[in-house]
Image (cartoon, rainbow, N blue to C red; front, top):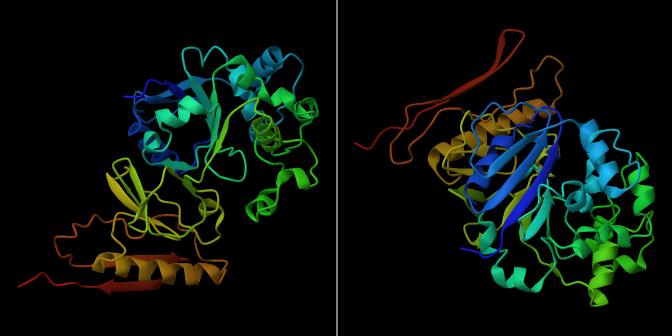
Length: 348
């Protein structure tokens, strides 16, 4: 049991995305961390005890931010909240009372075992913890809950400009210098529109004023070969990872949002789709063929082809038992475009 109490803060306004239930399921398996959601969306499903919901509006958050930050801020739309992530320790100061660390994040994340990576040794020796080597990560960064760190954003010469302007600056991360930083360039050698949190954290870390930890605990692309099993997340059957960020997966034109009614105890994240089937199993290979065929048709951009956004197929399979058939049907204008059946026989 860790000696450090941690909470993560998630303001989210509007309809919850399709991956929300996967996010929540992964939170459940990190029971000693609290995930606190501020939203105007009435969440119907039952949530784990460590996922806490505060119902509010974007306008109320803007008012609270203006009061606690000390001047009128501008949050014209939910996405602008990203620029305010480093100030959550001030905006939600009453919420984080009693916690040793607070953090900001995004819902497009599936967690593995967080404590296997964010150890007490790391928490002992660092004030800011990011999960990439190159920059402060908006989808997961932890801050020590002390006044200096909670107001770290004030060390940017541009924070007032950012908070008063309705434009998005990616202030919480690196002012959109991702590719240059991933290529190995120093943020201090690059031209930026504003001084971001990566500028602030790396500068103060170099000066010895704070202690920052940058390490690669995340997979962000869409490599496939990810397996989530009751709170453990692995890649290539070899590497344990702390989290998978769906930032690229969810933006792919060819991705298929998972529509499983319930999150299974284990599932695979392939390049384009989620599945309960092992990609190496016979059912998994057949499913992959169907998905490939569906995506080929989808990419033909036929105007009459419906956008079927679901995991294909929906049936449950026990890999220790044979199955009789898998059927995928794509219908356009009530006409069958594709109907294929594959059969596997039980062992004699």
